[in-house]
Image 1 (cartoon, rainbow, N blue to C red):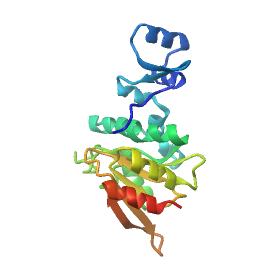
Image 2 (cartoon, rainbow, N blue to C red):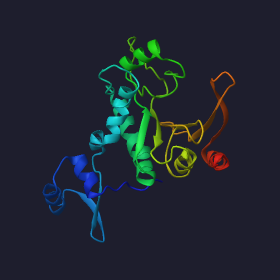
Image 3 (spheres, rainbow, N blue to C red):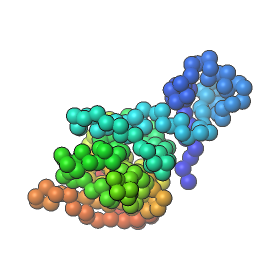
Image 4 (tube, rainbow, N blue to C red):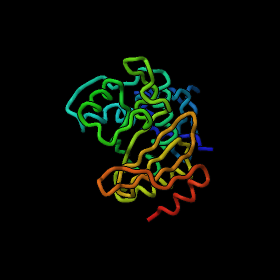
Length: 232
């Protein structure tokens, strides 16, 4: 079971959009859940919807701007998609950030509009029907783009660009997740959350023609064993 996430005063002020003085008044009036360690206050979230204000949420939505010269509304519309966004931030991205440092999302949420653009202009290596990047969004025919639901993102950690195996191992051993696609210790890591929470670790290899092909895979505790074998 994952530990309750705790936020520093600086992080919590950013999430709530309050000043030092306002945070203190909220604390002393009993409106916040917190623990005190020495002279430091650490806060718990009562309403995780506040996480939609976190910089990681902004990255999940706006990641495409560095890859594609377009400007669209890439915000999730379906309630299930929003809930999956919150789950991905809370259960994976924040714990990873707190343990390793700054998370750089290289491929995040894909709205129906962005999906149409990508499939028309740069579809190589994308599998919207199964990759969970579209969360629970609907296409023009009112069908789910990805039938698996949940949400996935690909990310790398600043300072761990050639040690993503360590990040993968941490997630497999400590966090709740649905799927991990592991492309190598120097490649972004694909991680998803979802109702099924298969804890599925999938190694992805590169063919002689440069295509991504599935390699070894494992689930649950077996995934932990496979993850240990991948450490370089």
